[in-house]
Length: 325
Image 1 (cartoon, rainbow, N blue to C red):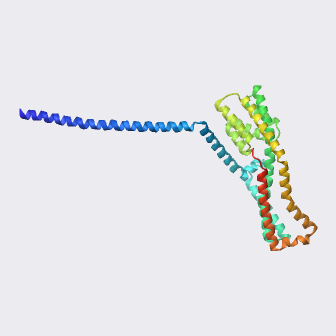
Image 2: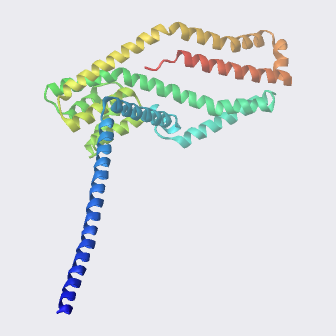
């Protein structure tokens, strides 16, 4: 009997210990889960707060400004390449031909200066300037003139699209009309774009290719309007009409800035051309007086210092009269 009672008591004791340890594990597990839930809830709350802070108007404005600055930096970096300048000038992408012409021009100028009996360093400087500076300057002038013609006629092209959409024509037909009726280089760029779209290229990709050939802010605005309209829908004629008004306002503001800065531009041109002009006139009228400047090493040093200071002054004046709007 005693053995039976002792066995029952032992069984009860072992069972109680087992339940105690099992309950402790479950309690610890429940405590751990509760702590994880609290931490997870705090993390979710922190993530929600961060997301809400990122959706504020100030945060969105900062993000947009950061994106625009990055796009401007990439645009400037891309527009400084020789291939981009050649495309903007309408000369294709003949980069190798450009470097061949530059090298040949620099070599010819250097040989001419040596034949005239000048110092080899002067010939090297003239060859360097003629080989690298003159071709870039010519291509830059051609690209600027072509971009100016494109920009002047771009608002009229947008008006053609607006009138065509209001009359029931599709956008592709309106772009074809621009390629036929508008002046060059606007017509050629739109013809190339419509040909690319007709061959199956998406409109946004065709506009991006067109922007690579003609990197202007007006074309970028046009591409943004078409991209937003394609994604969100809406009245395309009204959006392009507003864009045309904005572009005409930008053009008017540019003309006002040009008129207000005309005096400063003329002063900078006169100040920049006066010292070289005086040197040329004195050399023509009194060659013996100016001969030591070109034959003596000290004269060469003076010419070098004068050229450096004149370049710095011209660069500073250009920065003062170059307005970005």
